[in-house]
Image (cartoon, rainbow, N blue to C red; front, side):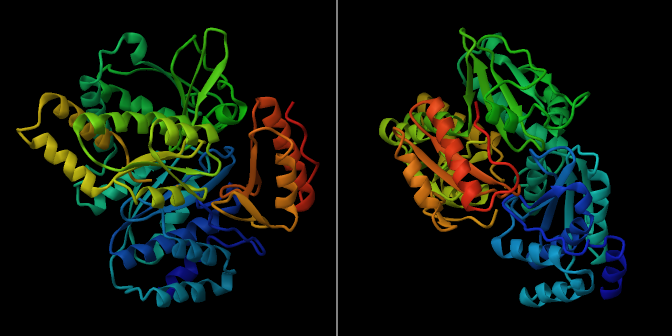
Length: 502
């Protein structure tokens, strides 16, 4: 083992002094800094596979980041994100200088009591970035140097690789671990859902899709035939021209509150945008006055939970449904869910892993970050109750229709899932450090009606996120700028001071 790792690691040397941290979305930075990281994540994935006696996934992607960036994230046996302890190991291995890599590797093996004679199986996927091919090969080198076996899926979306890993480790119970199996499972559930839904007009079947010039565009084109004309997709930013995520994609639409470049939206037409690895989606439309309306993660979660609650009532099922939000969720959505819909709302720290963990505490847990990352989790007990009602001959027609819709919804949802100077508490709503920052934010918030503002270190980029909410868009923009200035001055901002939004 030592000789093989030592020899191959020389082909993927670490630049001296470079330090990266495994964040909520794995490692992300400019692609030129990632070759050694990929090799080492191949090593770590192999150790994780031997430890869990399961297949582990390695996805090469930088999601919504610019095309010149890339990144990597590991996928655990049930398609979930890797545990916090192993995130620490990822950072430890990534930052080990060349001559201490073997020592750090042995440290992980000893701490986790890993039997190195166990076989290892790794599934690898990548998005459409030009750097993906060479970086994937570096991962393969890492896996092979520890004797692991690989299945390279090539170009896939992040949710597709999560699905493959889960299928493999459930021995086909979740589905067939192929791209075609993924399309078949989701399209069949969608078609069944469509059959039981109210009659759809051609207008309602039409959907404008922004593929962000990435993998989502490619895979939607592949999936379309499986949908049997029940969904008419008009694809823009299909990667035939234009750069990945440049003036398009979910992040661009959410931040700019505007349609992506290259999409011709008619009044009232339903539109959506993927991000670079298609694990995030936002919806939007324009009204008769030409005003743009964004259906972000908060609205998606509200719509889905409302729909599911109606079905549960019709089916006569007493299951607890909850929406899990972060402090960055729109306050109005929280009030609407709690006061009008009477749906439980739970608040947790930012990041899919925190939302996912909290959602697992309920019969049905719905979570979507405002940026469009999210899913719905159904507990095993909830799934069993729904399946038993479908099979029960005593179930009347109305209840049967509702439980069939619930069953199709379960099958349609892919339930598997993804700066340090500022530290936060109270589910990230208050800054602990640097000293004086929270006091400054508190005094700025008091100037505006129904206002809130928080800051937090990003888990995906070396920036600080500022959230501001107020009674009008103008006041929210003004508050956001004032808080940005406070962060820049008190937290050691780099470069010019933030400019006003307008």
